[in-house]
Length: 106
Image 1 (cartoon, one colour):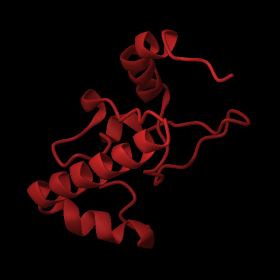
Image 2: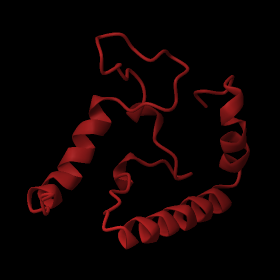
Image 3: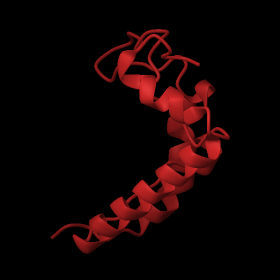
Image 4: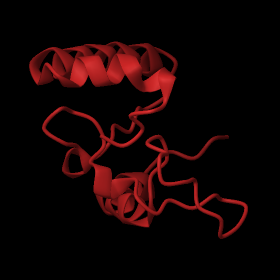
């Protein structure tokens, strides 16, 4: 698993050993966050299902080769928290139609 040497990712690695618990936790958190945001008039755009592994985490191929916004430098081989252009394209394919009809702020 990428990011294996990163201490802050240890809890995720433990959870990934039990996909059912991990998926339940992610779904519960996302449901609660979605409700809290909706109460403030904000719509949560969840990560596209096609970008998720069986564990509910971002598929590794969606993070390999990610680039920093401020240039062409990559995030590093062990980075498991930034997504790449493939993920970005998948996200926009999933959400561009919804965003096109979104209400604009006053």
